Image (cartoon, rainbow, N blue to C red):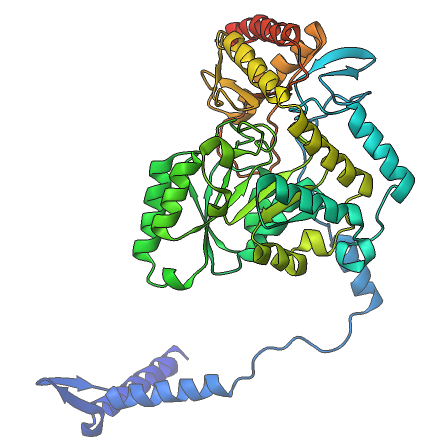
Length: 482
């Protein structure tokens, strides 16, 4: 048997060798004899034809049986709607009275530095009387968007009033302050456009940048050298830059640092590189400038040099909603293309009435601005000596921002230390301050800190009480940490 197998193998080898040695199976390439090329070519051709003749795999078309469906359902594990939390979510203290300079928490009166009530107008008698009159006349809500029978005469009155106050051709009223910036940005900037934004802008602006689907480039916080280099890189390296819409987006007073933007330098760069400027005045309107008209008045820059100006009315005006002001074309465009204006129910009339009254009070009482500036000066002087904490905000900013002198290297650990200070200050000395908590979606790159929103309604005793409490508690908490 073994001998028969060996004979068969030898015969086969002799046949293959003979086939490869045939003259038709040899070739000469660059003077070298290559044998068997014809055999190999034929073999490869057969393999290719075989592969091409094979049908691609298709799953059976028969429907799944009930048993198979039940088995698949038993094996399926749904993904969670939200990521799992490794710790208790942050629960801020609950106010039990108006968010004025003094408020009530857990039945106890505390000094409130957590509300952006810069002019101390919350609870002002004229505002309350204005709201009461508007409630009697219009009721509570508007029950419709502005373009669908939600426009009430008081809305138009406010738009005319704010335009007159700021010296602009027109303005538009939004029902929610947060939605103003993230609706205005996508209304003008689209996919393919370029936005250069400060890395410290707050979440509402970040959301607007995301919704615009534009190409967003961040520059270092309040750093004009970084802004200049960014604009230079964009204009010099992009051959199509002249055909694209380009914007610079900044805040007048940054909520995440308390810094004031150098508007005069930004305007120079805007004109040199031919960009448009979107300025958010939420924390500067009613605060900066001799008459509270914001960063343009403070910097001595004509408001006409800005393309779009927005602001939240929930701060200095102690109302709700937001507005955008600028040229008539800019405003009319938003009435047709801004989602927050077109699709949201309009601002309740009594809040528009309260905002008009707040502007009247600001114009009639310039001493409110003097009182606010004096309070800022006193608090700055006292807080400059807080151990372990450093003021990073501008001296004229209504937001006094304190960050750790020595970071732990982890934002989470820094936040824990700051929360401990804020909690003890509230529990032991009845001083309510706020820590700059950020959501997981917030891309702000600035360090976390303690924010004190200063009001014209605070007394000098309130300021000294807060500073003494922060000094004592910070020394105990950070002294042990260091």
